[in-house]
Length: 510
Image 1 (cartoon, rainbow, N blue to C red):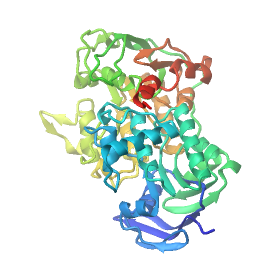
Image 2 (cartoon, helix red, strand yellow):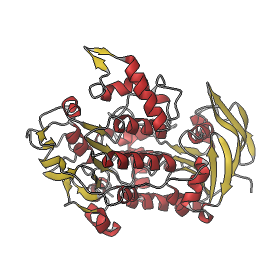
Image 3 (tube, rainbow, N blue to C red):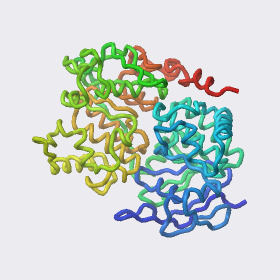
Image 4 (tube, helix red, strand yellow):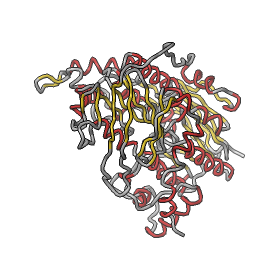
């Protein structure tokens, strides 16, 4: 039986960058094949050529043993290639059903398409109301749309680019069941992920890229997560180092009876949330996607202002009535979950994006005029200190890979040395080496006296990083406990299972 997909000598150049350098590997029918590499290693470029978004400068693609040219995504889909992108291709003002319809090549009557969507959702347990507007969905829920849209095409090869980066452990295991079922039916899966324990649990083969070149093909079940990570980065993986005998200082961030208003039918507002983060402490908040995490971050950052001036305070100064600018001046920096459009503007340069959040704290605007030199210098430091793969401060945010954009955003906020830092999904889509570097930077920031709040769906990340842990469920926060005293099972119980189960069941009537 021929290979389902075979790449030979694939090369792709961009100005100043050799993204793929003579890459060759093959994927068998029914195989789950991992594609690994650090941020900027060329993984996304490679799969975009397989999917027809761009064309290789050299090399050959063979499909079921026959050489093919894939001129565009529509041609790829005709071959039987589906793709779930790391950055979602969704229109926020449209419904789930309308977004899926836009991704279909054939015109299908709305009622028939809705029936097919409901059937796929029920078959694979990806429950979601087809009539919900995308703007009301969490990132995890939006991911389900991309997966359902790909499965509707009955693909022979399914490419998945960081599909679990915003999913909970329950949702990840559910996705793995779907993928294993697809593979058993003969569908090949090309799987990109930085979560190496997932690769070991799911994949049959792993191809590892570094600097655009293929460096190894291995059986991930015979490797350790650490050994694969070190092959990816070409060096030893550093562990998080913490000072011995650490102690926390006085209360720095105090949140008292914080609530937000329900903004829409599907919104989950924050309900009477109270917690305290001390100087030097990393406070973790776990939870299933869509349980009020976004409202909580917006209420802490000042995007949503409270009617109670004492609902949020730093060092005893009430901030509840202040907007984002006022809170940043008081020392609070924040990183939202969605990096594209919320944390950064894709069409702006990295320097301009630095001005957006650091202008007051670092004096980038004087008498209403932007100090471009200060912005470029600071951005250059972020790029250097956080190993962001970019051509320089003048690069647009949209030109960076997802992981590199995340490193830039995290670095931009951390290097401002805030008194309080609130971050959501700090290592979304970054490789193991970059995740370790971000974790170390957060630990170092806390050691310097900052109070840090980490909102994440990655329980391994929270357990490794945080001193104290609480769980958010339907907008309410559980009592905080020392992380070392809380088991994964207890966290799962506090999460209350998969969020929206009742609504989802109601959304899929017989």
